[in-house]
Image (tube, rainbow, N blue to C red; front, side, top):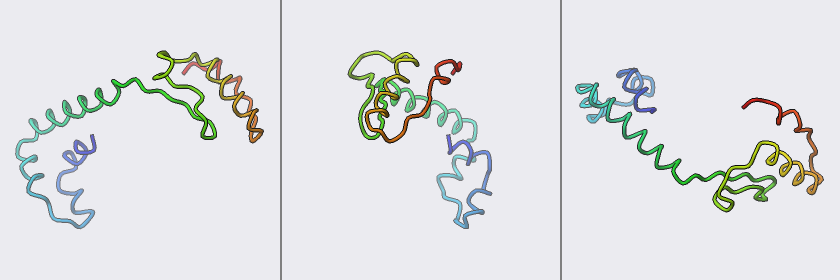
Length: 106
């Protein structure tokens, strides 16, 4: 999506950094609509492929607290908070009060 931002700024982005305008950028500027549509769809395709693994892992002090890949499902907010608090109490490093997070609508 950064490429879309560069497309909107025109040559100013290259002027700011003091680099010459590349040839590939000039051809993108000549076909703006096609370039933007292509960038948008390729970006969405890459994003969906990265998200398709379903990975969701939480670590506290280097210890894995939760892994969606291992359990096959997401934890509830209350369960995740209790796992984090339990891990923090065992490490005796920090004992925050996370009870107010369970009541927030995220």
